[in-house]
Length: 102
Image (tube, rainbow, N blue to C red; front, side, top):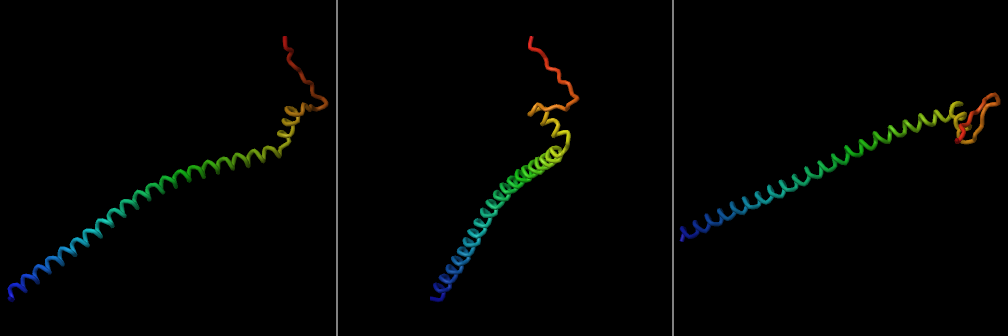
């Protein structure tokens, strides 16, 4: 009778070991898969970050151009150009030559 009890105990011990190994394997698998998904998300976010950095650089360059244009519009030269081109105004001592359409 002791032999049967001993064999039953050994069988139970093997089942426990196999169960523990199965649980460890399952945890390892889940952790590995989750790590792969996190790496993929990280790569996607890095690509988005690079695209946004490029967009920020473009917008900063555009803002600088706008500031330059704003400074230019405050000059006398800009006012003269607008007055001549859009309003057709000239100085009193200026002579304007127009080309004939022949």
